[in-house]
Image (cartoon, rainbow, N blue to C red; front, top):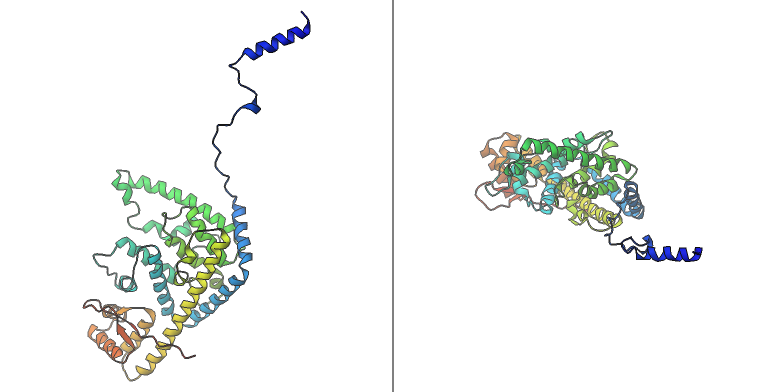
Length: 374
């Protein structure tokens, strides 16, 4: 048989083999597209570097205002820092849906008093916020690691953290160890990202850390409290390291509204909102300090005829606490309740303070603001 006919026969036989797969180029692709590749850590940090470069002018203004606030706090009494911390914590509680007013917060911090309608867990969280905004360990220091971050967050002593697993019949100890190991892994990744952004301005670095916090899932979903407090402390890291006397402990963000904490958009948009909120917050903090300074000067002039230590201590307390009750003043000054009440009544008659609650128990007073002279 000729060679041509043999090859034609073999080709025909191959065509009859219908069960063999066709050529690869003709095979249809029925597979679903795979997950999109995640951005590399270096690309994420580079995006925040580009955002910082685009917001350089506003960043400079915010840093300058923060320096002014730091200087005012450094030269003022320690009570000013506590006053701003209480206001910032109360504002944050509304953003996190805890809704702790200054009256309830002040009573809880000073006396550990709560009502039957108060959420104990919410009060604990906002109490932790006040403690970290007033002082305590810094979230990020040189050579800081997971243990330091865990200490800052006070995770090991947080009540009720593992109760939800007991309801499911699981061993709380085993679950706690598993959760802690997961937290350590996630925290290590977040800290590594923050280390890569060491060259960024602390304000930018704080903003980046706040938004990466949720990516790392270091807190519960839709709970920005821990991330916001951590970022507020990171934002003033350069100021804290450049001075010897204590000044600004945190950057007021919630005082400027909730826009800075919105997790929407690219890094450039997020940083722009962050800077705008921080600038407004610093202005609000400076205005409050001017008002309290003017009030203190006016109170000192009017209270000169009064004798004893109680009037002086009350004046200092009113500059440290946005709201003050007789019970709080009694504990904080050590004076007799009748003496405290008599001096507060005198201050109210002179127009220095006014009662704001309108209730019989735990009545609270606040200062009557005196605008600083221009």
